[in-house]
Image: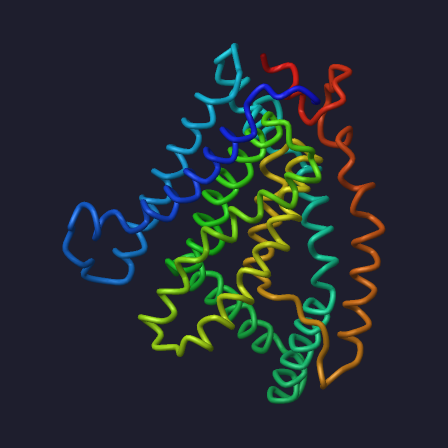
Length: 313
């Protein structure tokens, strides 16, 4: 879309406001509402979850008011946000992004597999062979681990609340605004992650004040985190623009949060480095073929732009 249906200045200001509100609302209970300190860490995190949900709703409303959408039906609005009502959970939008993302973590997956095999061997050796009791112990450990994760408030933050609210605000709301502001898709892919990384600057004070880190260590940790968020934000924006599905960057976000930083090498085994290089080659080779818009959208309406946004008005 060549013409600006929303001015670039308006789009940037709106994205900046959404970024600031996303962070500010997190601190509203104590700084604005003057609520007493939460009695437990779980209550503190639940407050954060509510605040993140409110900020997401605010961003969705701002986006809906600014974008030039004449038809205000729910299906049209949801489609703008990458929520396609006719096929909310498309298997392509889940499987392909997870597979692509896993290629970047080939080294990590190989390392985890080696650790798992080593643990299995230790269990077998300790029990003098594979027995029913040995398998039972392993299954019990697996079930206990799953139960522990599902009942952990930090797991809910890392794998559900943070990915969902951040993708809604920094992809579903900001990308349509920037595209309608006349920014080229590739510009948006690099511009949108800047807002995403700025939203993580609040960790600077949290690390310094709560973790008692020095400024040097705090800057190093936060700098690494910001660099990672810029890289991931570019990838997530690319997925959203190419597929037109919110679910694509969402599942990639969940997977990345689960895996952490990719493992590049291991002193214990050179296979990890080989797997990482092979995974990156596969990722770069399949990035465009596996994100072709026609794989994710049944109807293109002969529209050359992302998800038909030039026909919203």
